[in-house]
Image 1 (cartoon, one colour):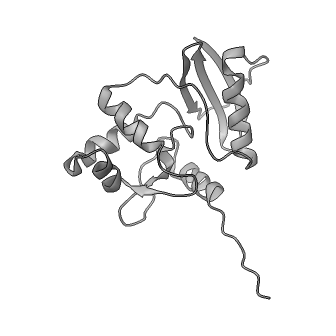
Image 2 (cartoon, rainbow, N blue to C red):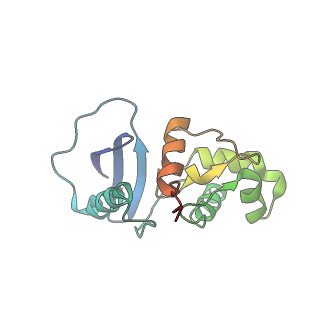
Image 3 (spheres, rainbow, N blue to C red):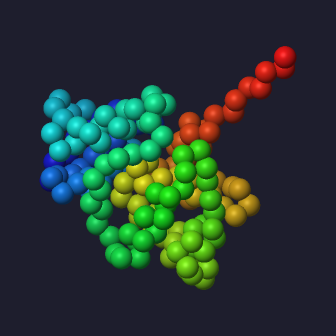
Length: 157
């Protein structure tokens, strides 16, 4: 398993993966030395994350290889269907996987998402529109949602 530490506008992120795909991307809460070299297997992920933060990328095309249960993987697959700049509720997500009563299990799977940003768990909000639960901190969730859907000033003339 190869690892790289990169700097992002939200802090240091660790990316892990190998020839089978990217298995983990997560935000670090402590300052960590940046990697001097980027392993070949991780270069595409690093480049795509940089493009995302620069505002030139709205979707990811990476080979993914997250570890999780079949249910978690089903939820993570559904998360990838939420369009850039949009959000949905945990209830909406439960309906999409076919079990409205699974809302807590869906929320738990969402919280265990191993691929920060690439699997956009930050796009899931409360039914009332509130920002709820986010492993990276609600301030990061707010930042990501604003980054993906900036308020556009309308012309007055």
